[in-house]
Length: 230
Length: 247
Image (cartoon, rainbow over all chains, first blue to last red; front, side):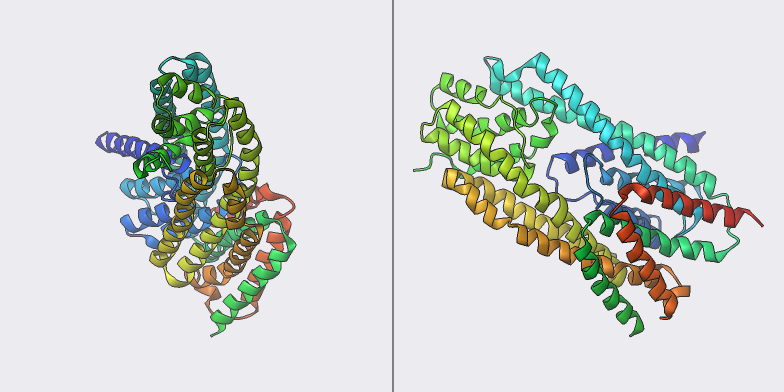
């Protein structure tokens, strides 16, 4: 019971911080502080497994290069990082390439598809609030506009926190379920460990959608293989 | 002589940061834009009625790239200072916001994040996470903060002449250069991933070449069907799951 309360408390705190960080990504600063590579590596480092943090961060950072249109990959990074941290509190390990790590990656990636829906809701609520309040037509327009800005930011934070709480719950449940699988074949772990970053790299390069860039990527790949040879 | 002081510029710059937070259907960024401008309007106009009237002029739908909204805010204040009418400023904004977005979107939404993310990932795999995080945060923020800060002062100083200058800063050639950097860095990822996350692929042989070739073929395939990766990653999970569960 105590463990469950502690877990819930940590999830709520994570969601609150996540909501604030989502606000940073959306408008306050937008200084790229909530990049998946950063938050996942930090989570991995805190729990003493920097490699898995780096693996998740690398994949999500590359997925984040997909054309945006309301997709918020910082949420995916926060979701993966929080799941990684909470998994260590629950006592199960998420290792590079293990089924648990792949499912965290997958759930985090899918979770961002809903962020565009949330963006649309927020935009809709803001529009309704703006119609009702009409701050610019009031006599004291400056004060009313400032009030509207505060309400908008509060609403963004609330929506961001609630969404992140939901994503963390789903990812943690899936990770706990998949972590029970005893690893029998090391080759599957190897394939997933190298396959997921490769897939993410292919997605990032494919999203640029220019044939000439493939030639430049080939230059990079040749350099990489040459460095491996050396 | 300019009537805006440095602190007014700082105040407006901070207020412009919440521009995207007030985005909504219909009015889009107009309320946030008016909020940012109100700090400068108070300094430029002395009469309270004139201030209120000027602020109401920004109630029309407004949408541009948030990082470059400063150049328009600065130019609007310059026009207000020169005594331009509400209609003239509205007409300028309607024309300029699309042009600014057309310059800002390819640079700030595609080229810069792609280059910084790809370089950071390549550095993380080849040289470790700490230098990678420095590249990611310092590289992105240095470029975008310099442009954000200078855009506001440039808009106020040069007024209508600020837009051609902005176009020169963020030219398509620079965006193209950044995407080439991103592509080369992405090419380094497969070998880096093999070194960092695998023990089997560590020795250079034809398997490594095959892995890189598969990654490049997948890239070409994804350029046609961008969300196909969700099916492939689910299939990867299924393979890992069944291979581990089945005896």
